Image (cartoon, rainbow over all chains, first blue to last red):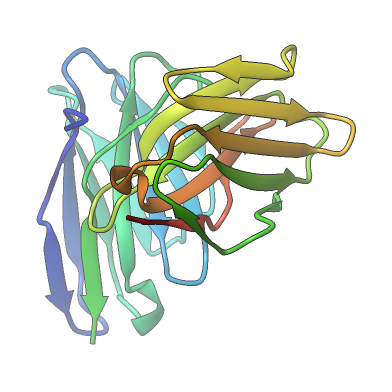
Length: 114
Length: 110
């Protein structure tokens, strides 16, 4: 158990809908990262938050957004969902802001868009 | 984007044998590398890391080798056990973010 929690574990929704994925980092970690993992690709970095502020952006679509709250938990919002958004979404956390630090991953949220 | 690839998508080994999983990376600026293990239904789990100022690093039953000349990384698992069955993938970091390979599926035959 990495200490990173994610909810929900599974999510089934329809195209055009909007969903929110939630992540709580390990105790003491200030950075939260979001990743997308689809069947035909490796983990794709989406976005990083550090202590409430956006720190780095990867391949995140404009339809996706995220935020980190004062209690350090983070939410990833996915809107206008398309079939291709079906994937595993992972959250990871690390102590500081550097992307070179070891990141500890949560169990993921499996999203299925029908 | 970055290209982090693996030489073999699947690997089967006999329990007790040593396993070697390979990874090729494309960015010569990458100076930090991590190997992750991902079991079915779980998130990636950190195994071992190595920085570019090193050629080799050992952990418990695992060794990572880095060859910067040919941009190649390998993970060696000694005395492979059934619990080692999982997908293993490498990640490279050129300074801004991690880029992950698609993974090699390791199956340990009892």
